[in-house]
Amino acid sequence: MTKTVTVSHPSGILKGQVQLPASKSEANRALIIAALAGGESELQNLSEANDTQLLQRLLSSDSDTIDAEDAGTVMRFLTAYYAVTGQTKTLTGTERMCQRPIKVLVEALQELGAGIEYLGEEGYPPLKIKSFTGSDKKRLKVRSDISSQYVSALLMVAPLLPEGLELELEGKISSKPYIEMTLALMKQFGVDASFEGNTITVPHQPYQPATFAVESDWSAASYWYSMVALAKEADVTLLGLREASHQGDKAIVEIMRRLGVYTEFMPDGTRLTKKRAEKRVAFDFSNCPDLAQTIVALCAASGTAVEMTGLESLRIKETDRIQALQIEVLGIGASLEERTPGVFQMNPSLMIDRELNFRTYQDHRMAMAFAPIALLQPIQIQEPEVVRKSYPRFWEDLEKMGFELRYSEQ
Image 1 (cartoon, rainbow, N blue to C red):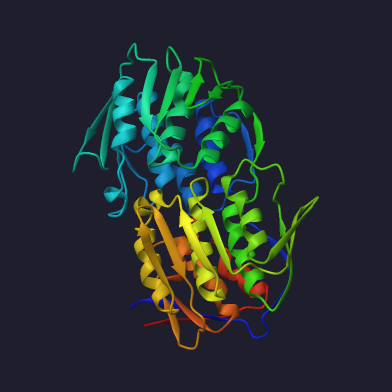
Image 2: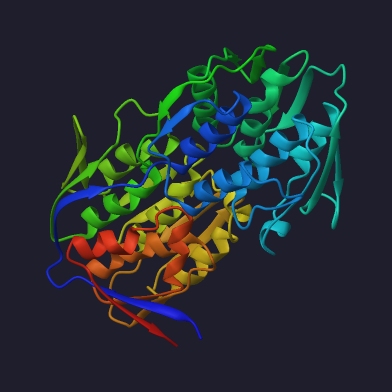
């Protein structure tokens, strides 16, 4: 039996306030850094996302076997954390997690003196983390075109290394704002580093306990931007967002300015209202790949043609997100095609007049990206509970804004 939610909105008019969840990107980094600082820090507004709650539990666990479930940041950050702090752990996850590569990070940690073995296929979890002997290596080259999480994992443990770390990033830097976020949070806890060109230098130094309040999540905000764009009328305030944000997904402000949403920054967050949208756009998602699904679903439904680059990392997420999008937009009568290597063209639907039933592929962002289409017509979304990974209250927040939800099993 597959759980399904039918979503509709009788009026198509959105007015009100939304208290967004806290950023799990910030929260997960803050949890690792606070642990490295000795556990005396005060972290405020921690994310209610399953990934953050999971990481919090695992950091306090005495178990020899650690299950990161389907959480990419948890797997990657804990690999570096356990390795450099010399803890003996078996680190595993879901079937999909054990299909997601981790070789770049493991090889870097091994060069630094970590004892790590693969318990299954080489290059993939599960891992056996055994010891940390250290090495005289202080300069590393690491690929940065696959996942910025590898880089962030190494940076957070770098101050503990006897000689610190000089990290040279090879290739196109993926999700650079997330690397900058990591460095900014490290600074909040007393660690200085430099990022010049493609080289990041972190001297050996101690973390200092600190008080840190986590910002609301710009990734979660993106779904409300999409809803405002598709609504007949809209005046929505998203609480807890900062204009001076470290989150890469703040890029949604400029992206949606072209797709029909005006942003006004307020003392307590942002106010979103409708404006005229462009019908043909091009975006590079290198620094904000988590926004791609939102934009594909919106443009497919609203009749906007979009050229997209910077999607390389989507292949190794919770699912192969490019393939999942290609399949699901077909139901709207749209298509997502790779015209030349790395360049995708989304050809939109001109009319939605069929029953729409979207699969989520165990991916929280698939569910939330396609949900705004319910403002145009009733839709069905399979496995709606996947939103617990990053935005557990998503469906409740939709109901508060006038959406009607009906759950069933098929």
